[in-house]
Length: 144
Ligand code: SF4
Ligand code: SF4
Image (cartoon, rainbow, N blue to C red):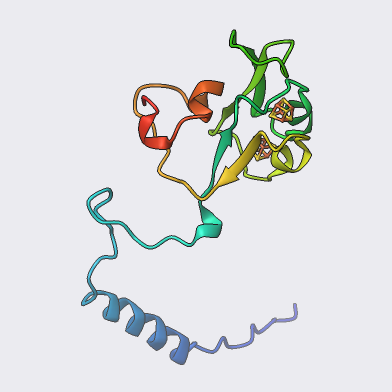
């Protein structure tokens, strides 16, 4: 029977020492946890968006609902005086599934739906869905 000798494995000394050094270094570093909302980190504009809706400009064409890839938009009945919106339907938006692809903004024929650099849209009691009226309000006036 032939004896097969396994080749000797080299011990990765430099890699091991580097890893130990990184772990050791972190022992003396302060944690980077931010005490939000008291402390706020700088977040670039390109990472924060909220959708707004101009109720007077929405004609209820449903294009935004059709183009949304995640079904985050649903048309909702809203009884308000607007001669341009004869079907009295407006979009609501579920921010829990919206990926900020901007398709709705691009396709809207009247620029009624648009994204702004507002953020901090967290909610405690209600769902992630903003009604058409809530979409038309400044964020600090939305009851959460
Ligand atoms: S927001 Fe724009 S695309 Fe959506 S229903 Fe209203 S007019 Fe049509
Ligand atoms: S930004 Fe994209 S994912 Fe979000 S509601 Fe508009 S179409 Fe849907």
